[in-house]
Amino acid sequence: MSELKILGIVGSLRKDSYNAFALKAAQELLPEGVSLETVSLLGIPVFNQDDETAPPAAVLEFKQKIMAADAILFATPEYNYSLPGGLKNALDWGSRPYGQSAWQGKAAAIMGVSIGNFGTARAQYDLRKILVALDMPVVVQPEVMIGNAAERFDQNGVLTDERSRNLIKKLLNTLVQLEKSVRRTTG
Ligand code: FNR
Image (cartoon, rainbow, N blue to C red; front, side, top):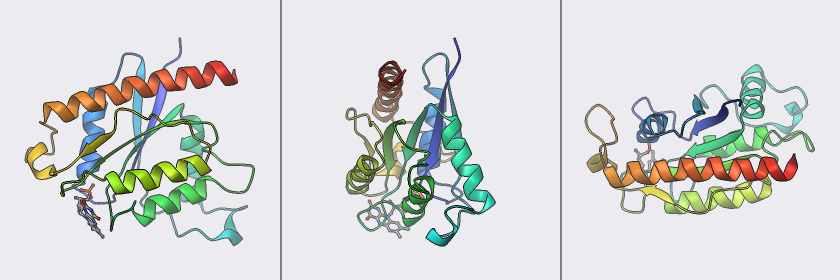
């Protein structure tokens, strides 16, 4: 049986991003037969509808990675009570031209890390709303909202918090189940 491919998308470009570290932790917690590749949003220009039928190379490459994946795992920070503009921008590129969205029907899961108390809750609910527009089935529970990041990761960026690790493991298992049920339904 072929391996199930998850594409991890980090909403932060920061070198020592906690969200990138959380995806790294997810890589260690994958169910058997599942792979997780991460794509960076670095180099994706601001969306211009004039270019949507002939997008820049970085966008084409990004879209191809989405299309080659079976499922998507978002790891997003919260910027000013919402998702980072760069992530929204990438979602917009991937959705166009009309009728040629790379996201359509693709199973997804969301997690996020912040240095504050709310663990990206506000950003995640905004992202969930956008995924409705993109017609993506999304894991509902568990919600993986990791707050107070400095206490949950060690100095090497390893997620040491057991509760968070268990939640990510559960999220991955649920994403795989969701992807399988989507696949069964759509053939
Ligand atoms: C933040 N941060 C932040 N945190 C939060 O919990 N709620 C918020 O609304 C914001 N707003 C915000 C705006 C901007 C522009 C920045 C740069 C940061 C702090 C944020 O949680 C922190 O920088 C994280 O470390 C960002 O995630 P990465 O880059 O570590 O993955």
